[in-house]
Image (cartoon, rainbow, N blue to C red; front, side, top):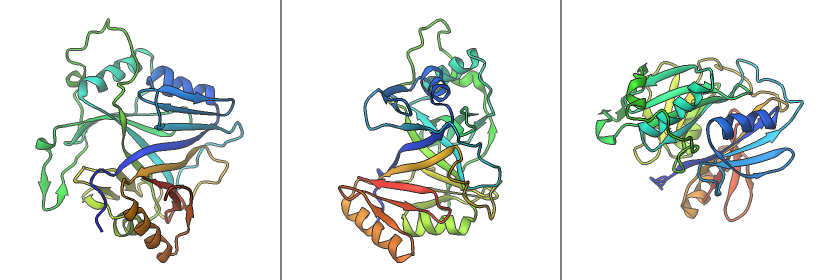
Length: 284
């Protein structure tokens, strides 16, 4: 069976040390809208409706994640075009947010920063697919300087801030893993995504439907690393939407045969830990 082309990353669940600070970052600055909130959790999306894109769970005793552990490298929020990316860039720039980098990846234009718990965040817009170069099954990507004037051209600097574009979603998730061969076994051989780029030193990228990548993995700081302790701030789990019940059933069987425990939820949904104990929810 082939993984459905319209498979996507649906959401990310994060443990945070201070919910108020995290909401200031994700809601007030980035412009995500709060769907629900209580004393210890909040759910947000781009349009204010479910399903959520981000779920924040507060643990005031959470520790900073140690370098060298496996887990989240960044969550990549995708915008419908470069102008919408530029609007959020200007919003952050005017609020003195610290950026970590700006890149032209040939397939996309991206801005990098981190949330208050040092979870990596990428904000990006894809270039037209007609501009992507496929070389013998590899979608060519690179890390080149980004001309910020391209993403801010034509934006009225006096226009009212209205929050993030309602069509923004999670385009991909990038993970620190301990071993690329194990990552390839889990995400390609078992999950069924294609390897779209193996040309970056120490990284592999996977996707469904010919996208440049839905999941990135790297060992740049985590080679042979261990999972972070449970009381660490960061990734609790992320959700992959696979709109095919038969395929989900097949996945559950594959993971069980590979010695990975799949925990049944409801309506065919289940959760599984990859080889680095990163929790993934698979849903219709």
